[in-house]
Length: 241
Image (tube, rainbow, N blue to C red; front, side, top):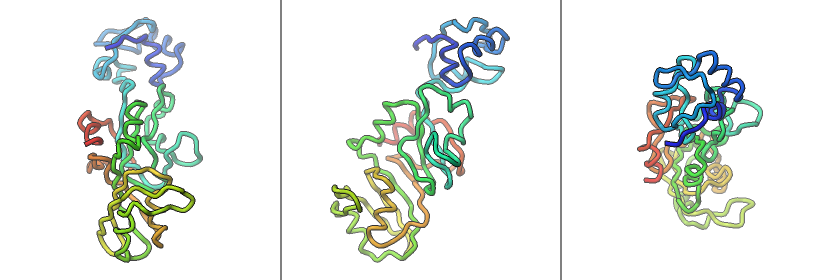
């Protein structure tokens, strides 16, 4: 485990400026392994067990960098740091907006799409998941305005479907009809509004869209819309399974 200055660590976790952390330490608000730390310049070991060892005002410190979250994104929130309206980052603790490195969404779901969303401050993990070379599958459940014709599966699987305004055909995708107006679609790319544009290309309109799975990771059944939690190592590995 690497050792990091306490004021630098807590400032990076969003607890305040270094001077504010120094005041907090002098006031006795920081404890490590049950012992009060009054010196904000002290270097402490940082590992995954940090929240179990370090307390701020009597509460476990937030997880250190290397954070990965799984969220059930609700309809009506945007995957952005800055746009107007409700943002996915509003669902996290307010101080997490000040974390450095910043927490980013792994790819994006549009405002009207719900379901499985990952967030991380680990740039290497983020790029591993979204890299086109990884071909991480994304599984969506789509509710459609009009009944399926029966031709969509072959068109999506052909590898020849062109989206409007693009010069490269889509990679083959798998369609599973669930009812006349509902289908599960598996894609391996992440183009802009891809699923909605695919159904538009075959003359239909997506009325509701929900992401169920990313790679081998399914949306946890215990997460209600708007809820999130820290991912386990097993869940991170499942994304690439």
